[in-house]
Image 1 (tube, rainbow, N blue to C red):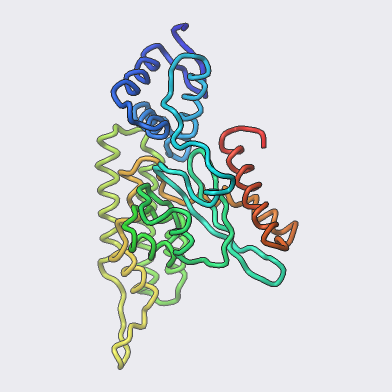
Image 2 (cartoon, rainbow, N blue to C red):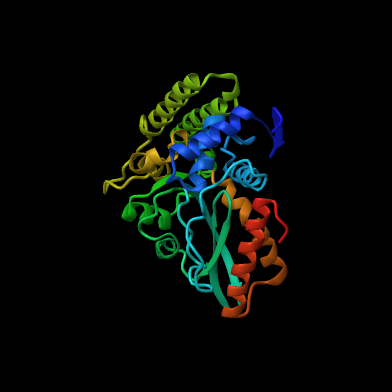
Length: 323
């Protein structure tokens, strides 16, 4: 092999190939996904949004194997009966982003769920928008990290199954901005203080390339503490004659941080998960366009066909393949 090999947007040297061989030799039980995650960590290989490029790493490994430079471990799982597990996410999945959007079928209402990993997208229709869908697809023993919105179905699932979760900070910012537009002066000031703290964290994220890893870690921890303090200190409150809270918006925001504040900062220490749920929202966009054009499906067979076709199209797009 020449000293430098250009592949998947990276320049690979002989020591990089030696690193991969060493990881394979030292960790014979690792799956391919675990290997790609480790490479992203070792190389600090990230996209413009700061997320690890696990999909690119997985593709690079496949290209190296096809070139005869490495031998990857066998794929996990063997052939199965047709459609037997088409609605289950294949393990292991270190990180998964989830979203849901409405779907029409004649006079009925369904929900289109999207499960987006680094190397695949899975679509599933269900009449329910509840946590039972998550149990059906992921099971109770899912051991990866979920990226999702702050929604009751996810709250129940992570509570019942003790799942690691990263709630979308982009949605949090929208909720905070709502507080800043309310007429109550105290609530507005509370929202402005909290919004400033969250924006301070994103300023660190966007400028992390100019800092050492240790400095980024320290700055992010300080930002986390600042946000928590802003959310829980000096919360506006006003009780009526019956003891009922009148400033519900600020009260609910503070309660969210008391109950689930940790889940807004998992991305700091959990590889493969980002601070927002943009990956799932991007994956579902073409489905929303299809819904506007076709006005939905007409039968169970149509739904099943759409599930499979959309899953194939979305997965091929992630992997840079033609569907």
